[in-house]
Length: 276
Image: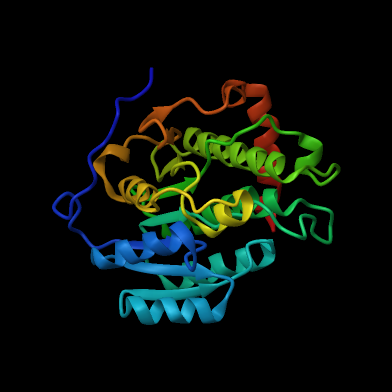
């Protein structure tokens, strides 16, 4: 049964306690806009990005509520080091918003043959979430950016044995992350909450401009649902669920996510990348 539509946005009264929130890919697009909105609400935001200047500029704009971490999500050793540094630096990280992602790129294959979309969109957020668990309270949240674009996963492509077209790789990598979030929730029944969220199709981001040649839809559509997923009581018992912001409700992801055998095969590949 699908959950009812949730059109109300979280108010400041709903969650007044200051949270510490990590946002990956925070220097552009929906990540940047979400970071600005959360900081304005009084939360402490940890901003992740690859570009040091963009990070510094964003910190200047936000001010004291922001701290910075730099890593290339296409390099899992950097992701692991970032996670280790964060666990050492913070007593607690209440929310992780796994926003960083790749769609079109001139270099889709990494040196080891891996598709960068699976590495950045699936393996990196799973690894980061896994390694940050010591710092995340049981009532904390992992918010993984999924997509309305989901497609059956080619396991050979997932392990770098076959090259995919841009949209194929993107859609498969997003379904793989959605499956991993679902599996994580089943193994961590006491928390933290792990949810996959399609923030909205064709939002006004750099990824959409470069990938589809359109300005895109109002970015606030995505920002609002990510804030709800991070803070509102509506998501407190939603671990393992997928929220489709195009329809404005929790929904079933791609049908493969209901196939235990397929999910097990996909999760095994993702989990193999948690041993960096």
